[in-house]
Length: 276
Image (cartoon, rainbow, N blue to C red; front, side, top):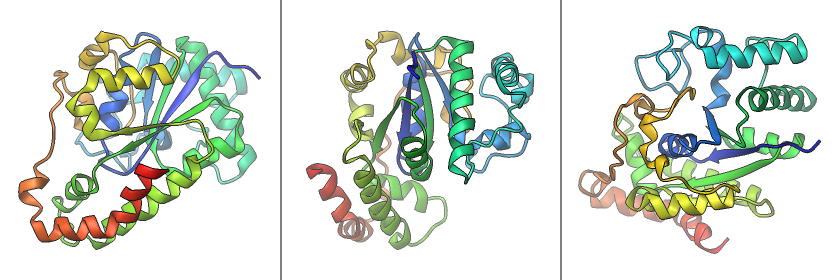
């Protein structure tokens, strides 16, 4: 089946900058983001999402108390129900069964495209296994965006929240980055570095949009003014300011010994991202 839309799937590690990229893409006039769609089950059942980092619980980014109070999500639910008899509460976008996984994800994305008319849909779930399932089990037009962040910055964002050791986060960075590179080796995809995006957003975003088949719009830099209904992500998605700040406090606060350890432990991954 030929589809009139494309899915941009942001894949990467926690604290890789996916919320910012999600918001920048969502601000395009022909795009719509659903955020971390992996968390739809929690939002549909009004539970606190696993990755929600704020006090807002299962409320929608637009300010509605829940997705059931949000006209955007209600319209999607109505379209899903018209197509299948199911509601968003009954959709299983994380299904273990490949057929159910494919059917329910196809149903959701087709319904969303019908409601919004968007040419680009952004799923910023980040999870490797979700992306692998979309690529393997569905015929959906998915373009992965592998968002990479300097391991020292990404790991500092974790350890400053109470994790004293960098050993496990560094090992996870190495393992997951290499695994993602292998998955995408023969897949048409986009590789983007967080540091480049925040340092010079316009040319980097322009390149991403061209790869996704759309022209860059300067209004995308005013992403906080765009309508937002994306699920989960950090507190940035609720801000009223479109300012983009470089977060590199790790340079002063991580310490030279831990920086050196992270560099050594993640070297296979950082080397591979330059040569794959």
